[in-house]
Image (cartoon, rainbow, N blue to C red; front, side, top):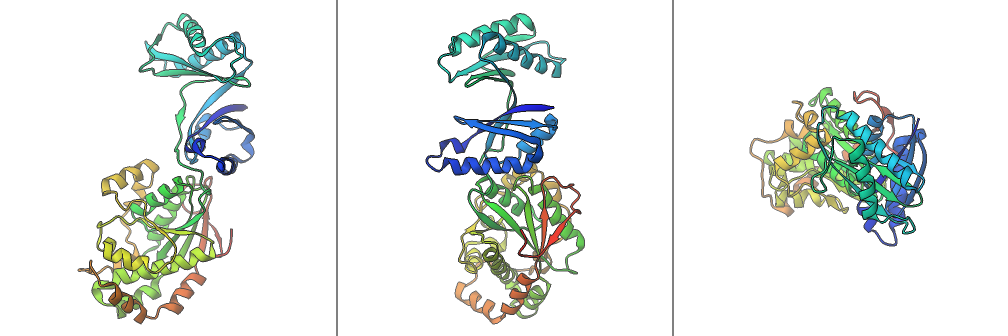
Length: 408
């Protein structure tokens, strides 16, 4: 069975001469998610129409609700531009809504029309009145309320007449991939998955990197990060996770670094590794979940130190958020329950009891240089394992496509 969906674009509609690039990326992302189910895709004046076959409404909604660039979508009817055809389609919308709400005794509703084709014999107000009157007579439960309707019957007169009911809100933002690629430093915590989500919403295509210190961090810790990657993958049009063996570096820092500086030194090494991965992956930025003053490694002084280990922009989308704001987003996107699973990451296990929060920049840079981690960092980059998460794979975190660092 083939169904027609109206797709509404949000911010893309404000673009100027480069709007086509954003629309093409959105189309590419939609085709990637819907694959063989997408029969056709057409667009006109801020509206796109997708014919989708052999997917139920729940499946379609699950895909479209995670595609950045869409502000809304709705199952839609396409008819000839006659008042009888339009009215019949509007009746079908009302009938479907009432059948889905059999307990409803009184349903406030309105008809909202847009007439792009000025040759249509009814103007928008006349069309609203004509269709609304018919619906009131046909369905006694419907009561006109243009201020607080529970049901809105939308009519758009374009090349054809398009009729649809309440639309479903899309995630907004810009299509993933239109702003280039970035490297997300993904821990098992609450903040970094949210940071990846927020940057994907601005069009960045993230690759994730996780620093694993086996046997000091367990297989459960790695599994947790895989689960987070799986949850993020529908929002990011698939996600590459690079697992870096960080044990050797972490132990050297623990043995030779000043105890109150081990966290900052470890973060510096992570940033350097992420930077090298970014060069290989042709990424233009690093992304972290750092929030100012949330922990000792996220003061202005420590951020300056860790940020100095890359010449790329370091994007910190939650830098000004408090913890509850971050948690609300994590709950919304489904990462929170996984993030709070009680499995330690390497930073937690090796963090000092009394970390330095206002280090001297030059002194700490000298401390890092004394560690002479160059060969270890090169090895960590060279041996990183790539795991690809497709949006449509099972959500158990086990079906991993393992390839080398240079795979696509």
